[in-house]
Length: 397
Image (cartoon, rainbow, N blue to C red; front, side, top):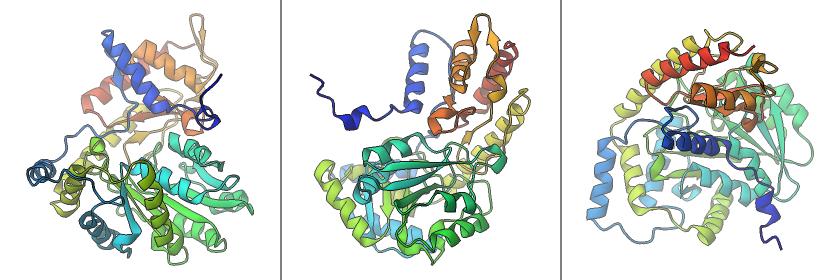
């Protein structure tokens, strides 16, 4: 008898985690693999944040925390949203969870009913479609390739909306492309959504502070839709705190209450120590954020220049996050010995086996023919990885 639920069997495993695991296995065998598959800053958590965590331990912050997070942290987040984004939220409208990933899933589970349609501009982060499926919703993908800088138009959005549409998920800056929607581009989407009062907007802004533009705009800035926007954010990317597992949602009070109810049944409140560290991150000096952003900007410039030297690759100029998403379909159909590259997935596996560079197939992000490289690594690794990719690609005929 099969004891595994259809719910779990319907899910696809995380392609990013799978590739990271494969590269780790090769490393364990002594292979010199450069892992560019993982979306994680390579910096250490700033010292003042670590000191706050140590202080919290000494002050015995070691008991169960409130399900939606410490009130002190939710107040700090509300202050951050007002100060940096000019958006008013009360602490009661904010729920802190074990990473932005949990809060994304919480919001979907709290708002989506079986058969509800969720619009997902693609390429999109690997978990979006799977989370919608977990909530028994129907993912409606809307593709935008490199020629559109990976951003959907208002016309595409309008065409995707049906009477069953319940939500749109919008990620800016984007994983996997690094694209950032401009104010005017968001305004065009808002003009469509303003006429659809039943559609929620789930705005994933976890890469907000890793951007190379003057200002990252949030769709929550627009009063026409503000009362239907749920913001997802956290400390993982901006403060190099991926392992601390602190993310949050901020949105309409009924949704915050529903998420708290849900969270109370399967994780309760998140780590007390990590929450106190997150408070320090938001309240402390922000120079660390600026310094890391400039390092990512330098790496972006480096990887774009090197990637454009690889024949057949079509490369945009990412404006945020720390990913490059080149179009590589020129290599599909080529061969190396008796191996034929039949897909971008085959090309990614070829690069792992031949160049010992780990990337992620664009198909995992709902856009085959591309691959994702993370440049959250050293300049030396970027140079060496792109050299290996260029040489391995040249062997394909």
